[in-house]
Length: 320
Image 1 (cartoon, rainbow, N blue to C red):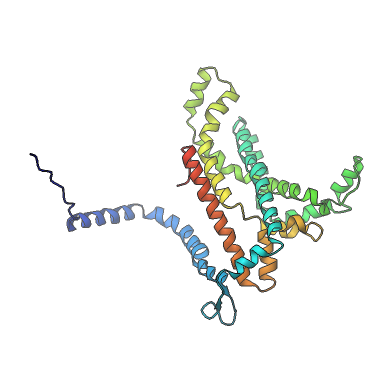
Image 2: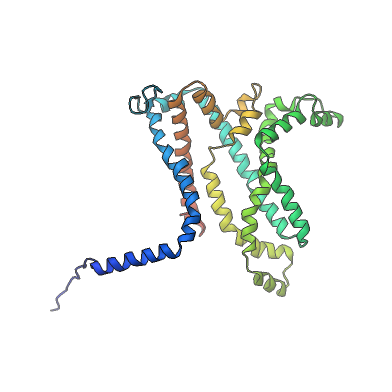
């Protein structure tokens, strides 16, 4: 009859711990310049993303600026109940989701298509010229872009006059609620699509050229090479950026929507970013504004966790 023996886990010896700590110090010292390069970014995230998180408690308080956070009364979820019962909540939620989905469906693929087209250009000077031209709008502020849009599309603007000249009825383009969402989406595409190609062009530059050479030997044309090599190589980058964008689906450009909005289109222009500013900050309801901001963050967290879970179950490309 054989006797079964169970192995007893032994604790880590002090010598092993010392050796491990020594290896860690050596690795940190050998990569010290890399950590120094990362230090400003880490400090920025810590200072502007993590330190302000203490302000979350305002969402559960009736904040009094004179008493401060420590001496303000706690009200629990009263501000969230007020938000969900507010008559404008569903309107603001609808506008935020519709504009975000339009950006997701129309704006997100544009940099990918543009990067694929630029990657097929064989003339380097032409490629760099086009890249420079499409990059430039990113450096123009939303104030300038919205001012140009208002100037061109007001009742006497060039675009309005051109539309009337082509035989269409003269309409107030800036006051038409049916055109507002499309105009906002086109503005975003024009401003940021070129800048968004940088990441995709960098991913394309990392594709092994031997794959294209082997495909040409097998008789593959340019379209077949793009379909079989280029697009699959981009998928990991596309999925990661898509997941990150889904996580920010409740956040839109405050500058753009605040400037382009007006009383005539307020029913389709009011989103959470502008709503927080008007109903929270301008009226001094800081706790209510914090509750709305926390609601946005929680929804974004749930969306990115859910989409990452689905990506993990259906493909090999996911965030974590």
